[in-house]
Image 1 (tube, rainbow, N blue to C red):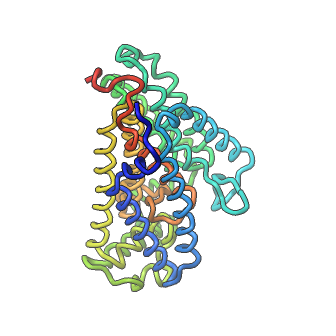
Image 2 (cartoon, one colour):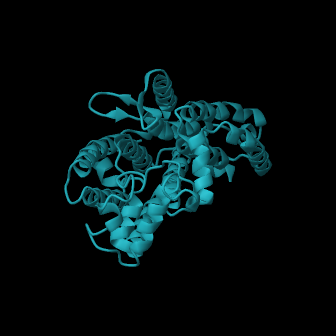
Image 3 (cartoon, rainbow, N blue to C red):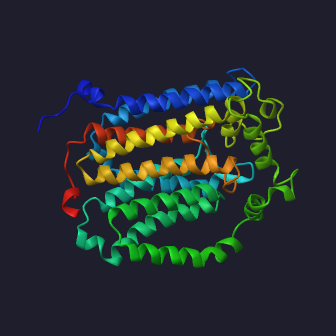
Length: 374
């Protein structure tokens, strides 16, 4: 089999997905510029530098053979797990949570990296399992451990939103690997039965967020303040929006966390339903193109990773937008490439790099043959 040159690999990088990702990043930079009152500091300038680093890593990763990433999936997963353990022992505390490692230049959030490496580890585990092995219950013991360990560590930080995304993304990969429906229903039943125990083990502020979601008007100046201001911002923007740099709720500092978790509310106030809908359509385009790329891959590892990463990206978008619109509880999930944040930006771009690698090397067949199973 002829090996591709670097130039040939670059030409095989899907241009529509690349441009769509860059477009969302550009929209995010514009929103951060506006959130800062019409200046590139402190958010837009730093976000652009992080994008430059992440974009470079994404291109480099995409040129590496997908079999390399499959081989070192477990290594990267356990490295991420060790970083989570380090956070537990000596992590940086900010806003009441212990989620970061202070590297001096920036704060590293290992849970963001774990979201990608967990998908890689699960895809590695299932890529060569036969249909017979997939049908056996004991096959799922190791995947359960792979998902449970980071979930437990992240929940202790505490970061309920990230824990839920890790669990949901892991469940998608396991489901796509071919688990029988009765096993899925059994797990869902056990999850339902465990909800009371989860509730009693939640922190008081997490319980308050759930109660605020159910009725934010009960405490409009306290726990309900964030979501009420977010809904006011989105609603006051109308269809066309108030205009660039003219969002009163955000510019007059009524909207909290306008540069991070609630950036969609800030963006919708200035660009309205029209702008918000276009942004959602752009996210949908990214997911559609990524899914097409994934289905063209010959290797089972690439397909499982692609499906898992697409699910992760979807959960990011769905939970954040649902949260700021008051449709879901506030759990602190960033909006991809829009919210200000270094580790989230770079880890997602690296995740897309592996997806591009799978697409560039989509002709490679290794592991279990997808066509033999269906």
